Length: 201
Image 1 (tube, rainbow, N blue to C red):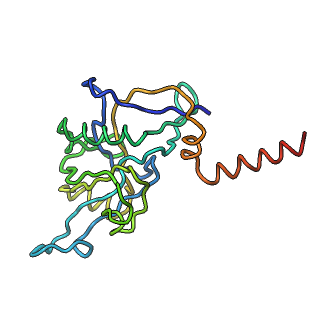
Image 2: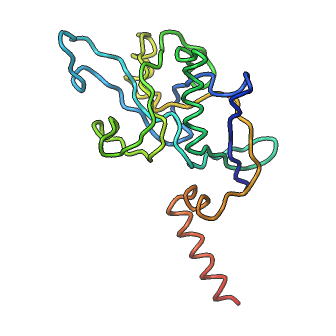
Image 3: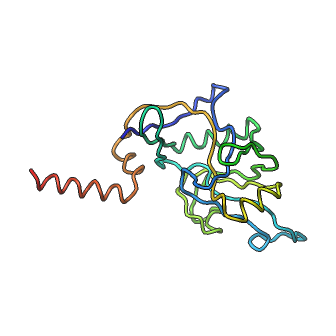
């Protein structure tokens, strides 16, 4: 199956992440945590903070796609993720959000954005989130009671998904990168297939 790396050209104005969507099934398979006042305590703050924190993009994570051109996987390199996170804020898109990539939402704003550089010292460790180095993390403030009560508190949405435009780099990655992209189950399955094929010969 084809594996396509999505890339960014910083000189193109119409490319990059345009919005963050809150979704039930994140393509990167990483749920967010809803931060409440019991989890982060600030002086003289009693109400729920209504902040969602989670992964926005994970490097070398294969994301399945099935479209007009058939089945394939896409992935983002660490460098592309850094560029995407910076361009998103440079373009002032931090208040662009949608529900399930469909309904435009108001009242949701990206209030924190960072790249995980140290798994032990990173904020993700504080909340028990285990994400790879190079992951783009974000915290979104939800000033929308309907969305918070109907979708977040009821667990109808479980993570973030980005919306944007990227160029694709049609190439099969080198073996090391390909192994990084594959899950342990996929690698084990391929080894089993190799052993069975060798026995048949």
